[in-house]
Image (tube, rainbow, N blue to C red; front, side, top):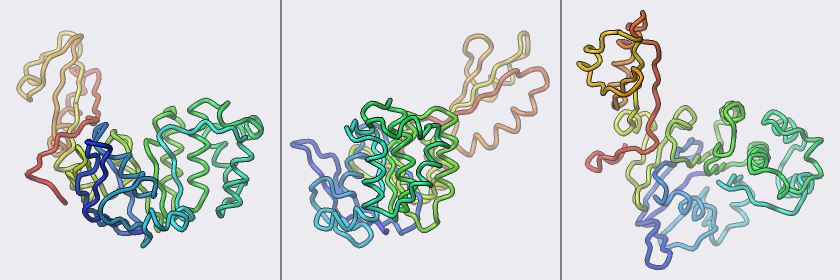
Length: 294
């Protein structure tokens, strides 16, 4: 399921959502589609699935998504950012997917249970009567059980609790190597261990298209926060470029390479001077346009 776009443009009235997107993504890659809200991520997904008209050329697995939408749909599984509130029951939805796709209902039930859904309790419940989180879990279970050649997940963990996210990560990691997958998110920390290729959009333009390792090395920023023990000397943190906060906390924003170099030094200070150490990736990635590409 190779993905190719040439001069892809999508307009909504006077607003240009995608401005000449050129991509060539080989089959079998696990793609992280990242960018701030309004960058064009969801629009790109909808074009690739044949849901939107567009200018330019698009091929997904050799199919034209608009002209061969049915052929593409047979190889596609999709989890939208907001699960639809359908009147059909959970069982009716599962039977419909079973009739259309190579779906193993036993596998579906196993996945649903692992994601925290008690099948016996939801089987006859209309989808619209489930909570947003429960609908999201069901759609994730359906998508992962459909044996799709292309898996498209738009913010799949947005409505999931921490334990369920870990289960999803494990299931996603067990997908066949031949499955092409696109995980769309504005949170880099949610997907960096799941993807091997990153496409970054900003205002409808491709700002990065290449290996995930290169993206992390050149684009990713992290925040390191440390908390000093009461009365501990803080001069060494000031020397390392940390800024003082409240209640003994100090903070510094660093690039990927700096983080790797700095953390061992901080770990060596956990002898009474530091009482807490916290590291997190920033959701918004600062892009240097002079360093675009892989």
